[in-house]
Amino acid sequence: MAGSDQAYQAAFKQMGIIRAENLEDFLDLALMFAFQPVPEGPNVVVITNSGGPGILAADASEKLGLRLTTITPDTVEKLHNILPPYASFYNPIDLLGDASAERYQKALEIILEDPEAQAIMVILSATATIDPKETTERLGRVSSKAKRKTLAACFLGPETLKIAQEPLSKARIPGFIYPERVISSLAKMWRYRLWLMSPEDEPLNLKVDRQRATEIISVARQQDRRQLYEHEVKESLSAYGFRFPRSLLARTSDEALLSAQAIGYPVVLKIISPAFVHKTDVGGVRVNTGNDQELLEAFFELTSRAKKIAPSALFGVLVQEMIRNGREIILGFHRDPQFGPMIMFGLGGIYVEVLKDVSFRIAPFGRRQAQEMIRETKGYPLLKGVRGQPEADLEALTAAILALAQLTLDFPELAEGDINPLMLRPHGQGALAVDARLTLGGKR
Ligand code: ADP
Ligand code: MG
Image (cartoon, rainbow, N blue to C red; front, side, top):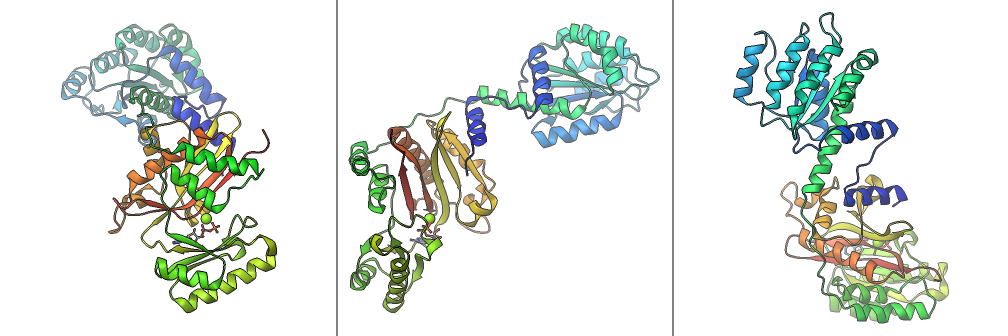
C-alpha cells in the first residue's frame, strides 16, 4: 500500500519541505517566499473593496487552517476615523466600492499597527473610482512598515494585475489574481513556520535485545530463506519488546486439545505453513473456538484443507489465546529505494482494506513523529474511544511503532514485514501481536 509518492510525502513532512501541488502552486510559493517573511502566526486580515472576494478568502482560510482574526477595538476606532460609517470594520474590512487609493493606503497603515494581524491580504476589484496603479504605489509606500507581517495583494482580473505589477514588484509585494491562491500559499507558509517552531524529536532510547534478533535472522539467511518462520518472527519481535498472545503449536489433535486446555477457551486455530502467507485466504484461521468438540472439528477441517493445497509443507496448527478486547491495528514496513525504511501505521481489518487510512514515516524518527503518525489518521478518534469505549493504549502503540522502526534500522536485510493485526487493548493493558511476518531481501 505504499507507493513512492507516499515516501516523498513522508519525507517532506518530516523535513519541513513544502509540497507544491503543481507548477502554478510552485510559482505562487516562489513569489511569496521571495518577497515576504514566513508568517509568525495563522492570523490573517483582509482589506477589500468588494464583499465577495473577501468571503472567498475567509472561506479558504477556514478550510486551510488560517484564521481571519478579530482586530483590536483600537484598530476599529482608527478605521472609523477614515472610513464611511457604512463600511465594514470587521475582518474582512470592506472599504466599499467607492474606495480610493488614499483610503487603501490609510487602511493598510492602520492594520499594519494592529498586533493581531500576522498576515495581511489586500484585495482590489477594478471599479470606476479606483486607480490600481496609484493604489499600488501608495500601498508600496507604507508597506515598508510591515516589518514581520506577511503582505500579499490580490488584484482581481489579469488586466488589473498587469497595471499594478511594476509598483508591486518594486515594493516586494507578491501580486495574485485569485484570493484562494493567496490563502493557499499563506497556509503552506504557516505550516512551514509550525515546522520551524516544533521542538526536536525525542531520540529513540529503546531497550532491545539486538543480539538475540541477530542470531535468529542469521539462521534464516544461512538457509537462504526469504520468509522467517512463525516462531522466528515471534522471537525476533519479542527481542524488540513486542508481546504475543499465548500460543502453542500442535501437530496432532491430541496436542491441540492439550494446548487449548492449557491456554483456556476460547482459542483461535491457525494453519502454520510456509506455503501460506495469508492464512485466511485459504480458510486457515478459525477464531473463537469454544470447547473441545469445536476445537477437534476445526483442527480436522483446517489440516485436511491445508494438506490438499500443500501436503508436504504443513508445520502444524497454532492454538492461540483469543484476544477479545483489542482494536485491530496494522503496522508495517518496507524499504523505499530512495528514502529507506518506511514505517506504516493504520487501523487494521476492514478499515485498512477499504479506507486505506494509513500514515507513513521514514525511520529514524522519534516519539513525537510516532504520535503524529497516529493522530493524523482519520480513524484516530476511534482509538481515543467513542460511545463509551475506553481509550486504547496509545502509549503501547507509540512504543510499538518506535520498536518496529528500530528493527528496520538495525537489520537492513529485512526487506519488509507487518504486524497485522496488532491487538491494541485499553489504556494500561498494552498491545499483542496476533499475526506477524518478516521477509528478508534478495541476495545482496
Ligand atoms: P492472516 O492474516 O494470515 O489471514 P491472522 O492471524 O491475521 O491471519 O488472522 C486473521 C484475522 O483473525 C485477524 O485479522 C483477526 O481479526 C482474527 N484473529 C486472529 N487471531 C486472533 C486472536 N488471537 N484473537 C482475536 N482475533 C484473532
Ligand atoms: Mg493477519
